[in-house]
Image (tube, rainbow, N blue to C red; front, side, top):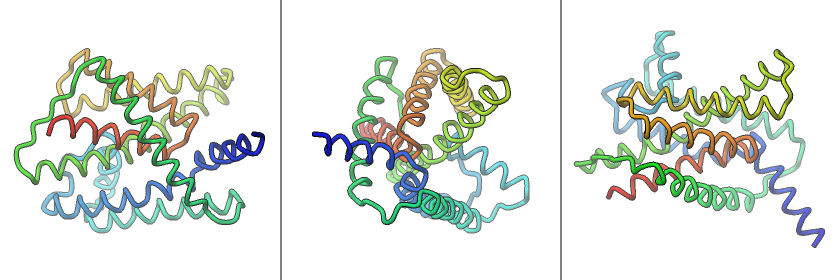
Length: 239
């Protein structure tokens, strides 16, 4: 029994590290970027997702709009951080079974999130052509990767630093406030792509809180795949 608890603790600790997260996320990022280059080959800034709007805006501001170069930069940065995280952890090898468990765990959380969000309302999607369906599948992957990176990894981490170290607020209260504020920012950014509706906005905030808590306890990789699974379930519910 003690050995099983120890193995579970090893999985929980390792699976939330950045290098395990990026090992899991990197293939999805590659699929997404390849999909972008195929589906939106004629437009650098075709609508993607609220998280990627910030990244693409940054690249545009520095006059870097070649989609192939941008895709290579993003993939390279993810790979470098993954390798760096692996070296910092100083543990030999990668447990492949952990990656399988992370995917299964993400599916579980994705189903829970989908069920909870449908307590608010269903999000309608209108997809007519086959290309539109593939585009939305690709968008679902990208939204999980970039929205979790911006609104969870970056914003929550930054807010915790400011609240805890800057304002000397306790770590637990800083975590709660950071998750709530990041969820509101997450919901607000979707207003760039859709008209305001209180039920939809409340749904976004609630989903942001759920994913923020999940990120805080289970790491970036699992929050990404939970978000992707949630998006896939929404799409599947419309077909």
